[in-house]
Image (tube, rainbow, N blue to C red; front, side):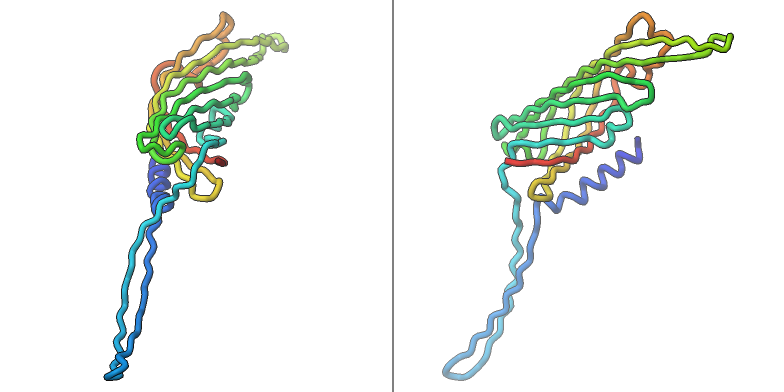
Length: 212
């Protein structure tokens, strides 16, 4: 996890120059005095900074880091210059687990440039989880147990969103999630520990497609 965090910070720093591009222009001007014939040459260096101000209203993303536990897909929509909302679907990726989950998020953009730049994002999720477990009974046969449970999260994220290409989106976020796990009576045969209970840090690295 520490290595992933370091790589994410390095990646975010390298992307800073994408949002604010600096250009250098060198102009050389030569003039000649028609009376004396003297030629004068001057050189001007001009530095300018440009900012991408394209309007982005819609975005679809995936978080590859989350594929360790969940396949995921999210959609975001800008409601105003400062507010965007999003929703997503997720499916467990661990062997033997099944189910489906949904998530919701609100993004607040202090800069007034939704879906671009720094944002604050409270979020929630709910996932229904199933598990099929088989083990030998000592007589050469196998006993099977089907168990299920659900996990809910409440979280808070600080993030940054870039659009380095016309439609290519990249995002980075860091925050905290609190997990609430509930299982049925047969869950003593199942290890739901991967989904856990309690607080855990949240690291998000999104890639996706955006459009107006």
